[in-house]
Image 1 (cartoon, protein in one colour):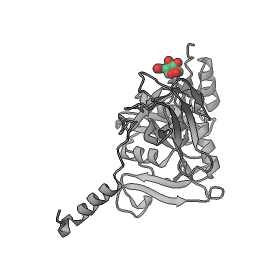
Image 2 (cartoon, rainbow, N blue to C red):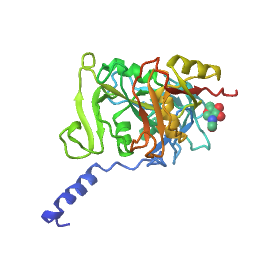
Image 3 (cartoon, protein in one colour):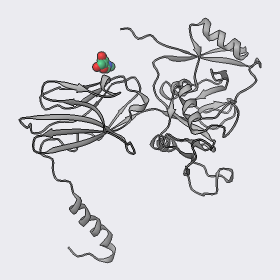
Image 4 (cartoon, protein in one colour):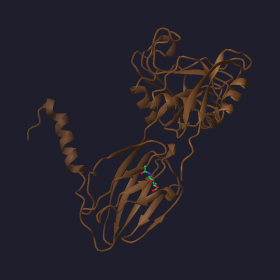
Length: 337
Ligand SMILES: *[C@@H]1O[C@H](CO)[C@@H](O)[C@H](O)[C@H]1NC(C)=O
C-alpha cells in the first residue's frame, strides 16, 4: 500500500489499528450484543454477556468500573455454573439472568440514579481470562439548582446535599453534555459530580463568556471547600406523580393544601421528572417544597410567561407570605407487594 501525503494520516491510523486490534475472544461474544443499555430509575435492566464457547470450569465476575477509584475493585457478583455470590452495595439488586446455558448476563433491579456507568463481565477460566464491557445509562434529566440565598452560594458539599434534597444527585459531565445536546442553555456555572465547575451554552452571548461557539464552558476543578457556585443535578423517573392545586396560597397554605390530598409539596427534581417523562405542562406558578415557585412548560406559548423555551421555569424564591401562587404536590403511589 502506497501512502501519499494526503493518505498518510489514514494510513497511519490503519497501521495503528492493525497493531492494536484486540485479539478475537474465544469464549465471550464480542461485541456484547449492544454496548449500551438504557434504563430509568426504578426499572430493571439486563447487561448482556453471552458465552459462545463454554469452558469446562469457569466463573463469571461482574464488576462496576470506577475510574479514579482507589482501593479494591468494585465487584458486584461472582458466579459459577450453579450459584452466585453477590457483593457490595449493588449485590442485593443483582442476579444472573441464565436465560439459557450460555447466558451470563446480569440483571439489575430497581435501578438507582448512581447505577449508571461501565460494567465488566469477566470470564475466569483456569488458563485465561476474558472480558467485555457494557455501559449502563440511566435516562434522566439535568436541572440547574441555585440556593435560596442567591447565585453562587454553594460549596461542593452543599451542592451535593442540595441535589439530594431535591430528589437528585450531582450530574456527571456526560449527563450535562447530553442535556446540552437536548437544549439546556444555562448561564450560571455549577458543580458536577467530578468536582469540576461547568455550564452549557447553546446561544453564545457576551454575558455568558467570550467564546463565540456553543459548547460546555469549563472552569476546571475548583476548591471544593472554599469556592462557591450553583449545582447541576440529575434525576430520573419517579414512582409517584405530580399534580397542581390552583389557588392564591402563601407557602404554608400551599403546604397544607397538598397535605389535605395526602401529598407533599413537590421537590424540584420531581417537577422536572414529571415535565420530562410525563410531558407535564402547566402555565401556572406554584410553590415547591424548597420555597421556590416554578411552572413546567412542554409546548412554549406566548401567553405563558412570554418565555421562549420549553423547560421548568422559575420565579425564584418569593416571600413565603405572598398569596399569589398555587401548589405543586407530589403523591407517592404505593407499590402493591
Ligand atoms: C424487576 O426485578 C425484580 C427482582 O428481580 C422482579 O421482582 C420484578 O418483577 C422485575 N420487574 C419487572 C418490571 O420486570
